[in-house]
Length: 430
Image (tube, rainbow, N blue to C red; front, side, top):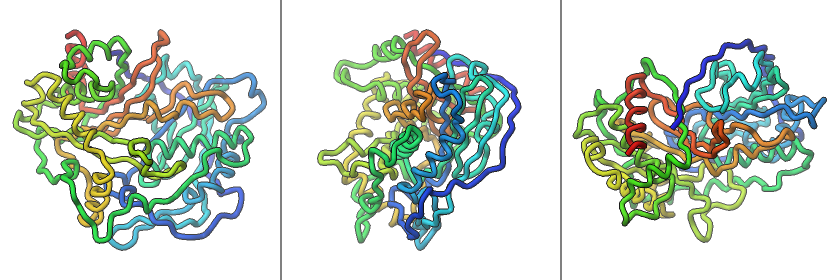
């Protein structure tokens, strides 16, 4: 379980932001988001970053020009991305397809890829310089070594991880000479709308109103970012805690259970306080026949929560938390997703529970690293950082020795981060 923050200072020459419009005229219309898309908890910007090495075979080609032109061509097919979000009755989000375009920034960075560290992982130094704080924007930065990085900021209500990968893969296809995406985009957001009238048929512990407490409400003071790497041998070590009747658990389940326990202990909440783990479960390949059509690029996941007291998590065997995580994931059904949509409409699109909550999203199999603009696969592709205090993402990762594993970024107050590191270290030692 390696962990190391990075420090680096560099100069950035940033060009003026420009709007990239679709390369051809696109429909002028209004499109409704789904009742899963426009919930309060998705009304923020997700940050992704991809690093690419210098490729001698691409000599004379400028990644800025190539990607900028490819985005313009792709927006012909994904034209809602070139529009603007509006809020309607009952806080319903609507895309006004105006064709105005997305903001694009070109930059040159006075640093080489190697200076970002080997291996590359969050937290990245001077992130605010690499991903300029402009809403709904993308940016390509050339590096001194001939490599480049592509950073993107997107309103989460428009897409989830798989939807964003689908869009970026289409941009990459256009950059390599295609005339149309191999997977045509599908809007069809009505598939995840509430029934009329709304029917909430399930208990949704992830949206319960819970009074906060001093012990688990993390302040924004002195937050630090840190990334942990779990090698195959360390994941094997965690599996030794799995009781026989849960022997077929997934890597996601055992890692999530262990992180939930260690993070809870690190925060030092009151033993009687309720702690939640929220798992993001992708609905795309969950059902047969599929609930969502191929090419759907909206938010296609459900939030599923498990709940236990801090005392239970810290005292009981790991199998206790593991069983709760497994049950939460198993609760994901078409009925549950439809009930969630109805909850959004009937209760004013509530935010998920914040007090005592830790959320995890598994990005390992989404394919961000396979987005190839012509320079080959990315050597790092994923979230630019952990969501402050609340969430972690599981990112595919290769360490210095060439071992594949899982990278997990965290953001916590410094003392809690040190306790988390120690708890994880002790757990891995058995």
